[in-house]
Length: 124
Length: 112
Image (cartoon, rainbow over all chains, first blue to last red; front, top):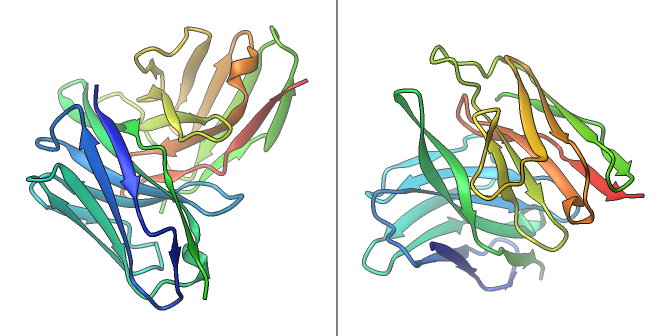
């Protein structure tokens, strides 16, 4: 059974870079799409986009925070990096798998496995 | 981006009674393949979200049959036939028809 575990620094200073990693266990990172979602305190869910195990990405251009995703198949990990963080980036960050299914003859992916989340506070 | 609007914002339900949550999208989520590209997720207190329904009406593995999803186009409903205490949490709809995926604001379900 696939499990995901986020890891991160917990506390980051404004203008610094935030690096988060999601470790995949119980299954392979290969042949799957992976995604990041965050939840600011007391608010709803924000979708960052996804990364395929090959490294190809599809980002959410509506998020104001500059970010990139990467994947390391040798470690069964994928990562999210936010640069120049501000207080608005304070949130719980979740990683998830976009699990495959079929919509007729078309592929469809939904968030079928989630990590427990890691809290990040941006503060000096 | 497609805007997802949920109602009500919160709901207090007596155990054993039904509950219904509405989700409306700013654009149609119905594809030519006949499927609506909409999921429902539940975030229980202190937990990460978990999928309940995908493609508008298909229950995810392990989800009790008291949960059902319906609707098409721009109007969708999640129904719980008999609410149980473990159903408390925040319910989110999310569209996958157009990038980027977007979530509704959430509906908080509490027990009376």
